[in-house]
Image (cartoon, rainbow, N blue to C red; front, side, top):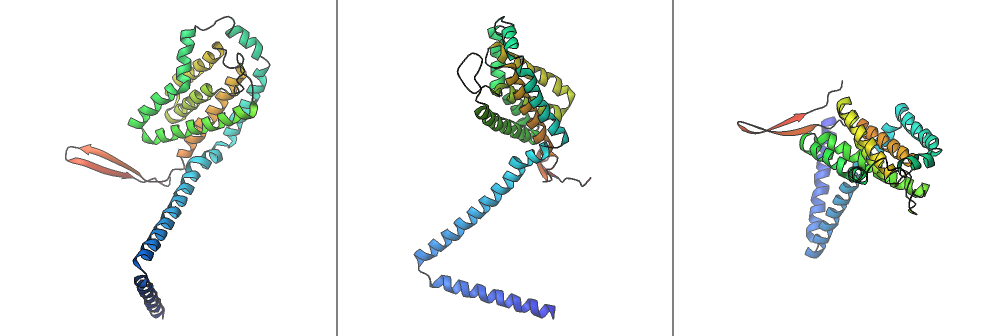
Length: 263
């Protein structure tokens, strides 16, 4: 009985297909092309929407779901408390650093370059050569950090110490380098974390020395960077897609596929 029903359904499907084909042949050539183009456009649009939906799920929303766990909430809360606590010391800190030249202009310039993306570019470039998977999550961390930092600057509308520019809180230089440092700490452990966090702290100090930011600006920037450096690394733990690698051996190219294990 099941076989008979299946056969009838198959015949019905074939019949419908033949009917559609006959109807298609009756159309004028111009309308055929228009129909084909419409169907192709619909297919492309549907595929693009599905691809974007998958991309957004993995690279945009997932880090926020992962990041706001207990540890992430502690980082965010600690950052807010740190900003509130250091705001009371902003003027004294500015006097100690900017007014007494605790860092030479040339040295502070190095920190400026590192914070503008040099540190992230060097690390990211090396990862693209030797560690593609972590390179992607590093880029995610930088992208999320940049967007959130820009939004917070507009919301806070805080003036910088030595200018009328109202984009002071949080420090963008500091948030970017701390995102890289946080990513390196989670991806490679303490051996990478120590020099990375020292470099990030140096960048923050260069912002005080240049009189470009208040102390609390850099604390806020560090909090944003640390949060997203961690959140995007946690996102990597949810990546269950197979990894394809191309190797070169004596006999020629060799392709290997690594499937995730359920344990």
